Length: 357
Image (cartoon, rainbow, N blue to C red; front, side):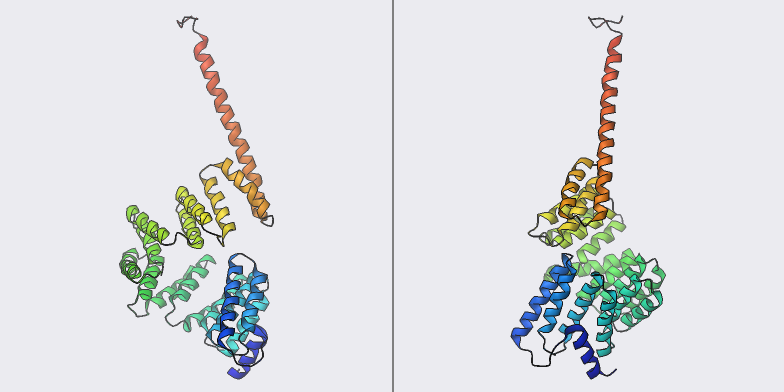
């Protein structure tokens, strides 16, 4: 399909637009609606997100730039999360009819096929995504991680190796390569690349997650002191970012450091209007459970199921927590009873003056 015909498909499926000029005010409105859509996505309001992304596209009035293509991808993702995979695929199809080298469209469509267990089509799209990714390390990494989660790490490793062939000495290259070495288990090279990237990040006041990856690397190398240092630095630099704090909490949970995980989740909840409050609260409860603080976990879960009644898994977990706290209370009572009985037995053979009978 030629670009002119592809453009029409994008306009019909993604935007439904007329073809007039687009001024600066409309671009501002477009960006504002896009921001609202992203926030709705973060809060799990996917239908609202679809509507906001559509409103953003309505502002373009026929102009197709990278911005509009990116918003189309936002809308496709929101459609998929809203239980409309075929509509999401249709958006990707339209974008690829307009530009058959748009890597993000192949990537997203491949993700949907993977979720549907349509492995062959997913792998085909992933091949195309990698072929058109240029120096976008993020796509290569996500291809690997998606396939790894799907139980096909052997299909994903090749994308990491392809990414390592990219040349570059900039901050993004160092951080990307460092994390790829980490994923491949080459911690020595990961440490070397990420140490350089972290130093540049500090100097330029930017964030490519080099400190976070370096903390994970030092963890794997067994240097807990250095690992904790970089985790703390990363957390300090993102003290007001609830999403980062949730991510740190999840990592601490994976490492079975439940006390630290609890701190991260609670710090995330303490930020102003956290967009991921539900996830943070679930993480907090999970950390408390792992710490055997069942009473606290039960109290927090009781409020959680009232605030999020649609979370059926949480409702089931609440029942188990009730059982656990009841059992814990029973064990405590039995211990207390045994202690009291032991005191009585020890004193049973003594006279009033304390001598043995």
